[in-house]
Length: 77
Image 1 (cartoon, rainbow, N blue to C red):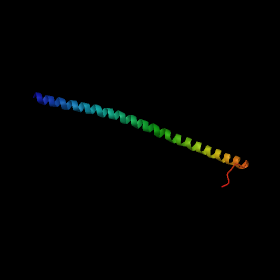
Image 2 (cartoon, one colour):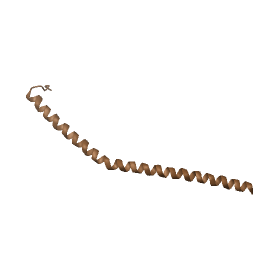
Image 3 (spheres, rainbow, N blue to C red):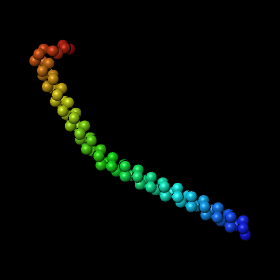
Image 4 (cartoon, rainbow, N blue to C red):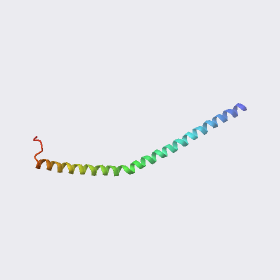
């Protein structure tokens, strides 16, 4: 009888440890989902910002090209 009780106590303790590990993983999964959601929310805005910056760089390059042509600073290709 004592051996059966010890075995049941051992199994019960193992289940409690597993449940604690599962609970910890559930919290970690929730935190990961929240972080991914935040990234999903901010990524489109960042992409729009990059597109705007690229557009401004293109305009500056065009203006610089015009200045170089007016001053005859361009290389002949």
